[in-house]
Image (cartoon, rainbow, N blue to C red; front, side):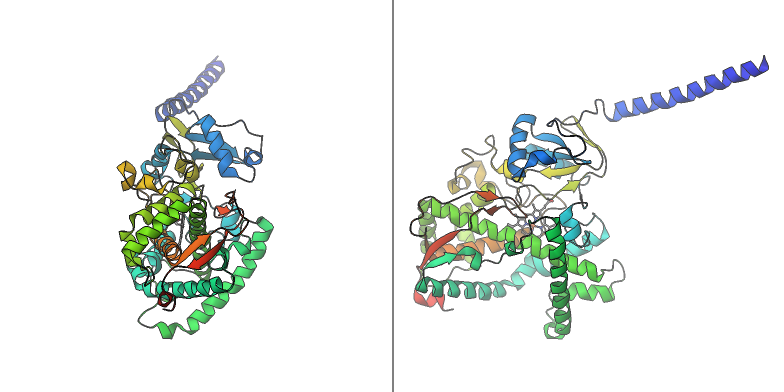
Length: 464
Ligand code: HEM
């Protein structure tokens, strides 16, 4: 009898404990998330998920899908979940309201492993002390306002070399291939597949090692005016807190090469292509520059604020041809909720910068190239520096592009000089300019731009 009672009580106790945990779990998940409904998205394959659906122009495919499934869309990509934000409001919800939760990068992607020393640099680093230190050093000694001012004369000299070389070649053949002049790393075929990346990584490693050795040997020549590499190398010896390894330094240099070269040059190439396609825009830019600068000297960085039409051309190019059409992936640290949908922990976030720039609810006739849209009305105040979610080609929030200021200076100064110093025409026989895109580390023109250039300033402007 007593044994039966014990068994009965034990059974009751176990049932009560199970019931307690089930109820607690249900109540807490109900409180935390009433529906746990994932955002809508396409039906995908088991195991491989949406990967085979994306094709070789994933930004175009994802933009088409977003038209069906909405501004916050969920896809399974292999084993991990990905959420895509495709309107300014959706981008704001993630990059502003939930910025902290999405301040880590997803580092398990091939680029981070093979082209960034296993996320040892800044771009793919976790949000933490190493990332903070690298970002601070880059800002102070290379990418921030003061550092950019300090290096202004170097840009003048370098651009002088480029303009002179272009002037000489225009005298000979007049034929100009932009890729020959604007620094680009496209020749390294970075959008190649993983095997290519591994091979490339070895070549980069040899190059970076040599660069660091040479730089260390000549550090005494820059005493009093150290550059970024001198500073990060010094940190390795002197730091009392976060200490950088040689791999961190190499990864940082590689980050700056890959993030900073093709991105800026592709904007310049697209802007020139749009102007060749719409010669009246080039003409209006020339008129404005002739009034403000004249034809007896080259454009200077200080002229740019006085050239509103030219600045509008730059913004219009950034809207229509953002270099990184899909933001560098971030990842959620905790589960969260957006627009009533449940976003699990460890979900990758992709902000669809390209689709936002072409959203017909935001931009009138988004496929046209119309710089005038930035000259008046509410668009006149839109700025690409991460606060206006209609134009976020540099991303936004804590992980926003560290090179934003530098990129804007480079694009405006190089493009402005190219436009002011030369007349641009399509090569003989080319009637229609090919404006197809090719998806890679930066969104490039599928067919590189070729044009005929002729000098338009007085001879002395090309000599200095
Ligand atoms: C037109 C040119 C450029 C574009 C469109 C561009 C775009 C971007 C974007 C979209 C991101 C991700 C932002 C986010 O997650 O919210 C990024 C990150 C980054 N960019 Fe740029 N970028 C450009 C030029 C540059 C330049 C010139 C440099 C430096 C030399 C640079 C260095 C970086 C770095 C280091 C990061 C990672 C920042 C971090 O994770 O904290 N970029 N860039």
